[in-house]
Image 1 (tube, rainbow, N blue to C red):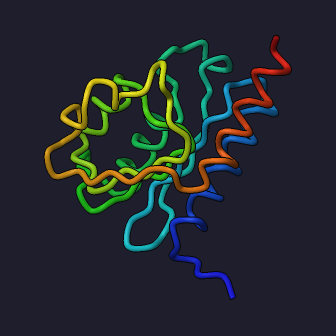
Image 2: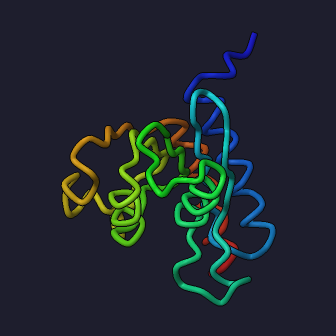
Length: 147
């Protein structure tokens, strides 16, 4: 039986979003926002489609979740994202006062953790490595095709 409230379940939903990005020629990053065990927002990278360097999955998911809740604060929400957020996205997560961030693959080149967890709101909890191999494989496959 599938535990629909498990980290794996929600990360698989983010992976499905990442696959949509890959099919559209975007870097395959996907995100879902969960509030009270319900997905309230889904997004994937759309920087190419929108010709907008800020159209990262995390930013689009935050905007959608804020619209759904009618609040700019997501202090009762969890963001599942397939790749460690960049500093820009970490800043947005801090302003949203996100309760918890869970990401799959680390980003040793552009991930926010190089700068320390202090980029997030002090109350934001962080977990990583959820379905890391599957998340990493999507990125490796995408960039292998690009080269």
